[in-house]
Amino acid sequence: MTITFNKESFRGDYSYHNSATAIRRFPFPFDRDEYMYSVNMEPHKGGRPGSVFEARFDVDEHYVAEMEDRAITLSRDPMRCQSLPHMTLAGWDVLELIMTSKAQDYPDLFELHRDGNRWRWVNRPLGIDDTFTFLDETTLPYGPMEYITRQTQGDFAVLDQREGNLWMDAGMVTSQADWSLDFDIGMNFFEWHAPVPRAAEMGIFQRALKFLLNIQQDTPARRLNWTMTVNPRLDTSPETYPEWGPEKRSLTPENLGQKQYLRVELQSFWRLPRSNGLLFPIRCYLISLQDLVTVPKWGRRFHRVIRDLPEDLATYKGFIVNRPMIVDYLSRFDDGAPTSPGIWPD
Amino acid sequence: MTSAHSIASSPRYAPLEPRACSAALMIADDAGMAAIDALIGQNPELGRKATILRIGATAPPDTLPAALDGALSQARMGLQVWLAGSQGLIARAQALLLAAGLPKGAIQSEHRGTAARRMQCVHCKTLAEGVTTDPYTCPGCGRALFVRDHFSARLGAFQGVCIDAETPGDIPEPQELRL
Image 1 (cartoon, rainbow over the protein chains, first blue to last red):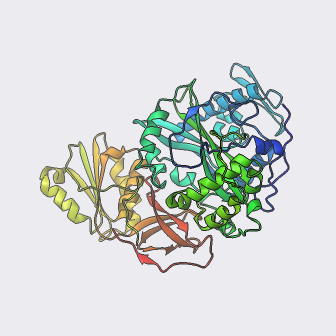
Image 2: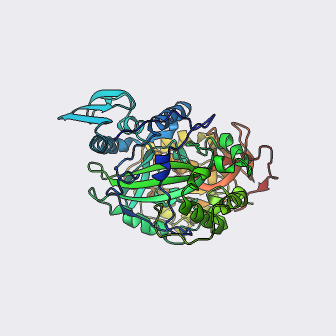
Image 3: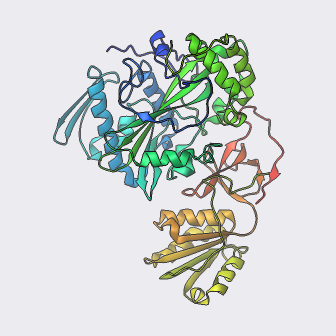
């Protein structure tokens, strides 16, 4: 597999773009013409060849640019990466899981050579060739979680499991849909989800927690989640809301197809072997509406989903003020024809 | 108008109840002392073994960390803590106690007094004590902040978020916070 990495930005001139291949493999999250919360878990055991589900940690054309954007965000706000003192062992679990997975799934991009605890890690796209001692923090330039997640797309929450609950006690969070690791670190599953409307009373969190507590080492799981973002911006954090908030009001009927993005999270869940923690990667995919509607089924369906979404969900997802304009734009790509079941293009 | 206790991260308060313990620590401000008195009224024995830190009237609020350090330096297994008073006092004391390693289950709290909240600005991270309006002005960065119900026990604070980020300058009239 050969990937050509884009030269692009997620801020400033927003030169982020998707190739025809990236559009085709976009994880469109709607398997029907309407949306409501559900515990939509499935095993994370590969998927269609070429899809974002195929590898354990998908690497795509945005990899290098995303890691550059993460470095910028961390230099401005180091608290986007935090680990409470008891989470260091879980950090080594994360490092091992990602390194072994990437070296197996992308042997032309990554290599891992292990001689006892003496490990050599080669990351070709980022030009890294490091030798270190596994479980010895002093041999890495950062803590183990920070080291490997500076080289892996997506945000990462590392959860401690105790008292029948999951506690967000470590994380690397620079491409989030408006939540703060610095504020939420140390919270349990119900506390950090507290601002989500409606889902608690539907019993979503009780059922999801029960599922997650029982995840085993050989049975990772995944689900898709989504929201909307104006401009292809990874760092939509509460911390920087004054920077990106005004951009939400910059949409016009003329620029909407280019500036309004569907933001999809591929969330996965991994039991960690030494710490018994849970790794929760939240991988962000962005597609402009003008690219999305090049797949006719997606254009039709997305129009119907956005048009019929309950008001409180549209508010929570942050696009209520722009919804009429978005629906108007998308309606031009909905001829009323029936859509086929499932998320894939026809 | 914003009211607390509406979401899963919001602090929960209940009337203080006597509980068996090897040692007792009670922390209250002026408004909270009535709750401590009621607790001791239920169990005078508890009152005899309790260390009571009264914050406010005789000791200013910024003496809390030092006073707590002093009380905890002699703490043993089986310590129970009772907190009473403003949301800010309870939140600060609880955050210090949790950081010191006390289990959450060993801490009871009862809210007395005003609806004022302890807030953290999510942008500049400045903590503001005794916030009584929504929105309020951040003493750190000067932004007008919306008072969210989302609460961090670790920080002992609710979250404040810029209210006019999307429409700079469009700031609604501040409303008094209600219980």
